[in-house]
Length: 210
Ligand code: ADP
Ligand code: TYD
Image 1 (tube, rainbow, N blue to C red):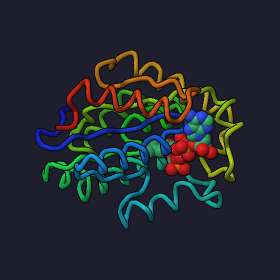
Image 2: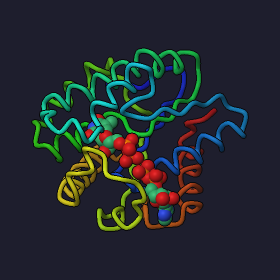
Image 3: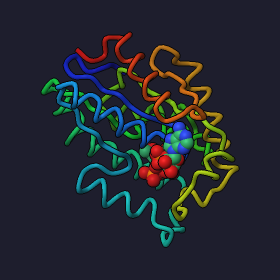
């Protein structure tokens, strides 16, 4: 896996409801206000085709979807997004922020659904053309706290409940341990603003944004 030689690629990860979408949007506004050209994408989704795949993946009337199909559709959505949006924008020297990327597949389909993690790494490599983020922010909270914050109806994956979220979190923690240079763990219990400031500090410290 390797990073883009031109633009900067920043990803956000964590269990459902950890606060990563909030942080991704704050960072998008901050970077655009600074005069950079930054875009935000979300997964699964982010292109016409990937949004169609998202409907199949998250709709609660698709309960017959098997774990293997789920893994393939998650990564199919990512392949389309990577080819259509992420790589061209990085090639153009832009900053791309993604709300979820490769680590979600390892955490959810690996930890959550029990699919072989080494195989998921390979699948990720194929579907992203080996594109690695420059930095990943893993916003960490316990599933109990995420459930307290929850305001929306559960989608098909959230129906897996607290057990699934706990297994997902375990894998995120082990990924962060194995790749400490790429994955930065953020304490999701801090205030929105405090987390945002730490993210900016980390980005500046690493010269991720020119
Ligand atoms: P995610 O994208 O990880 O599912 P969101 O950013 O949508 O999470 O946040 C989930 C909920 O938690 C929202 O209601 C949001 O306002 C709230 N929230 C986000 N960050 C924090 C925080 N640091 N402290 C308390 N509540 C938060
Ligand atoms: P979404 O509502 O976009 O995320 P969030 O709840 O974090 O705001 O739902 C996306 C769901 O898809 C979420 O439960 C995580 C799951 N997912 C996977 O299982 N594997 C993946 O590879 C990706 C990208 C997401």
